[in-house]
Image (cartoon, rainbow, N blue to C red; front, side, top):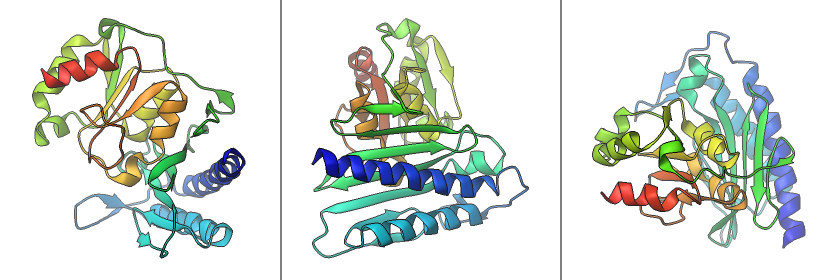
Length: 257
């Protein structure tokens, strides 16, 4: 299993890198987004990057299922491997020329995400992990921070308005008051900040599976937590938190109030 995971992880790293370099051809180039039915933006770069990723998966692993943000699900009967693709996580940042967008790949095997990659092309930062193989940040082992007190913690988020929109305003206010620094422009980058020890808490009031598929192995292998706002390790709750192990109990306590 470890050899298989290592091979899949190497493939995911290379694939995310190639897709990310493709997106750079459209970054800060005046590209205008279209808008999907849910009013989220999409660009030709999102679509081309996902097509590149899908093509590589279909060629290398023709019996694997695929779920992508832009082109939906390609199911294979009886498939026990499923790839989740977000070709550009943070399209709003991408279209504004903000370099914190990422290419996300997660591999689920028999219902559990076992490998994940997040590549940030404009920063040339790669965070990758697989179960039992550690978490690496640009090739070096990554760990969550050792900060133990919320009063010393950095909390990050994507959109503070989403907390009220999804019924998390009071929880966010308690966390906001308890932490040292609050910083935005989160999306996937916020979760990677936690995994690499540069922040202690990342909160998303709403996510899709492709937004968060890489992060269970990334955070776990880095010594932290990724899951829902109740402490369950999952990508299917439509909400997400990353935290280092030391502050997690206090974060969950503040959420509960």
